[in-house]
Image (tube, rainbow, N blue to C red; front, side, top):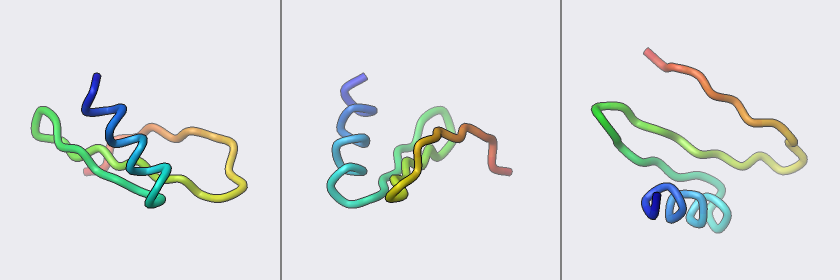
Length: 43
């Protein structure tokens, strides 16, 4: 859980971040004015 929290803090500061887990890359992005969350698989 600390890894996700650290990624979210970095996203808040820099606008984006990435973490790798179980062979997948998870990207966190903040778009100004956006009020939604998208979850999807990227192939």
